[in-house]
Image 1: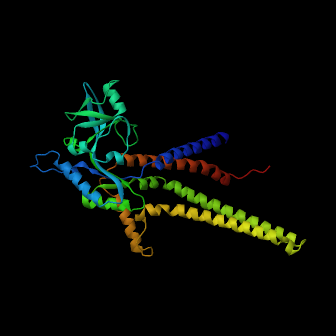
Image 2: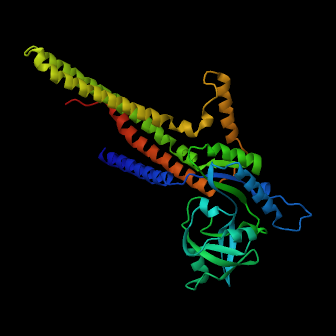
Length: 389
């Protein structure tokens, strides 16, 4: 039994560590809106076009049109194409990296820590200059200890000038160890895998709904929309459920204890009343009543906080709430609308979304470990009868 108890304690400790690590990552993620779709769906070209950048320019114009509908809702919005396994070479060395062909404003939506040089400028974005930003580790692998800024690297048979280095740490959702960034119009010959639009929402402006509608109606329809803030909350729903159940349990226990204290105070007052006059006890009685009222008011405040905590997801997941709460048809429509979003044949993910979902898995496993470690001893005490000496 002792070994089993230690094992369960270790399991619960491991669960707590998983939850703490995952929560730290989820709570520190930037609020961001993303819209992703396959490049073949987004980039379409005409046979008689002589300008290879024309499809990308049309895509940028569509993004700008959608952005004009989001004035006051988002502070920054950017378009980019993503390709994994892109070969980046220098001399006889070459390594595979995830290539981001980015439009103006990308580094506002997805900030990067610059270690040397500079990021891609707006003029270079507009002109489609052959410049590139590498992560520092990739640059070291290609050039060793040499000065990197101003060097040339080969990409899709073209030479790009290195203008900056960033600090990159590989995270969940990235297939390649290294990353590189080029202007979107400079990568017209690159066969992207996905195209995505990212935006930084302004709080309390309805940016999430406005962004999704703008992308669907004014950009390219049929893509996948994600609110990173909403997905992070979805990843912690199991913890919210546990917190709600535990909070209700302890609040009821607290209420029982408070009621017991009040009963003891009443009984004590009755005993004193049999020995003293009422006028001698009136001030003590008023003080006790005031303290009891304050305690019950604090308890009601805790109940209010718990209820606010429990309904907070409804402010994010507005699609869960039917238009008419008393009509069965409204509830049925909500159900099928949610099922329709899950039945999409092709779902295009993003790096940030993959990261959120991974930490969501860690959170669930941590919660399961905690529940298992608590439930086994609790069930054992109920099932195994106590022995009498």
